[in-house]
Length: 237
Image (cartoon, rainbow, N blue to C red; front, side, top):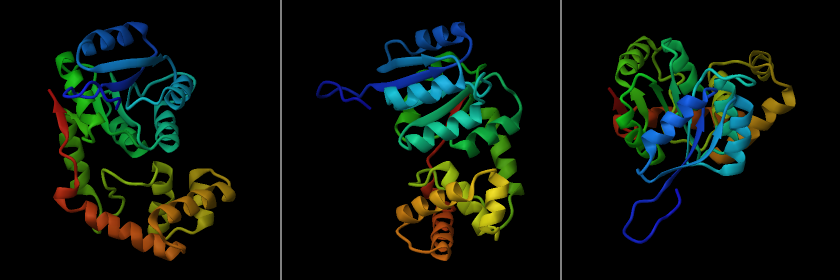
């Protein structure tokens, strides 16, 4: 976040992504005067990825239904290229799976467009500060998914992590016992790309072998399972 004058709150830099120009206008109006600066707007997923890299926003507020490049892929590319950028999905999609997909892709929040627009500034500011944001209706979906999750914290990820979503995907599969060849086939990536993701993850984790990386990830999951390691979600009515 850009720092303002001494004694003032920092201004949050925001990228708004929606194919409907009216929605982008409504979002701009809702955020006006709340120390949130809309630094750019995008109408499709490809443009969102490009502007996120060029404009360096703190937060990207985006629909998950986008032309050119679908929302989940755009999210993965944005957070992979700029891990400090936080993405909040702001969508009309009512399918709970869309929210799960967005969070797995690396989003920090999932809010539907029927939310009270007066809460948008609080949501954006909170996410910029490191919190998660979800609609109240979506909280029950997350609880149900958590209850149905397998034992052992498989797939659980800390709110804050040095690993990108793609690096987590590779390590998740290795932790589940898949071979590198299986990971390559599942993610539809080249062996060189998968090895590159694994090597970057190993450097970030400070380990020097695949087995050590798996152990380190399991330790991160064990830490994430403790309630105090999760950011309190900002809920929207």
